[in-house]
Image (cartoon, rainbow, N blue to C red; front, side, top):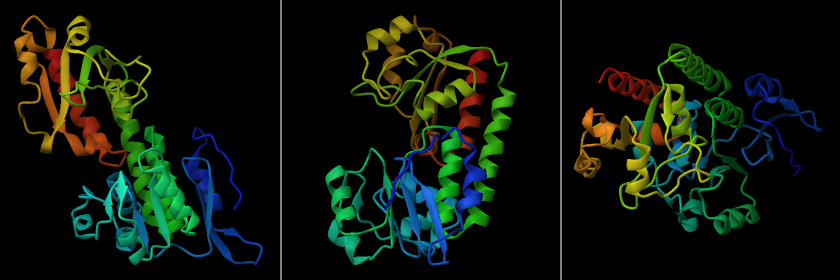
Length: 300
């Protein structure tokens, strides 16, 4: 199958509307899309049995209007609630190939850099149609929904949801375009201490809300850091994800540093972990919540 590469800065919604139903050499309609690895996949008919190998892929497939066609997911595929009923074929780092084969998928949605390369290669050798996704921008989320809907034949639902997300993010961007900058630290994990740079989607959300990521220029997307460098950066707000956004003890260790601005101003915030950590439409609501948290921090 031919492969090609595409810049994601191109208006993807327009492009996929054009080639969603492209004629094949035999005169039949084909359903074609280009994945985030730059490879084109064409199906002679819409996929009917779809396996998703990451929780984000599962959620995106439902967002594309094809939830009823998903026959397999992986651990933590928990949104929307209907996804919790799916047969599971392991987790994103260890796929149960025997269980996956038994479900006979006609399309496998993979995580570009998150699934085991050896297992992905084996699935390719077995002839399964593969489509890799890993949205790294807000537009990338919309385009992923559109492309998945093309492959599933659910363009009407998928393109509508993609545009809802696109317009929603644009509205938030406009609302906070002139927001007062505020130094922010986002804690991904406590032990080891980890954060994100500006290339990560969470980093892009912080910037959207007028936050200045104190570790935004670090070369690694999810770098490990020390408590000492956080103290030196002296953020005015610290955020982390938790179950349902409920306060827990993940930020308690910072209370031992009362001289830090974020602690002195009581700007230790929790947001729901799943929506902010997955490249799906729920990122819109997560963005609004983070913006609200930073508004609170500006007032302190």
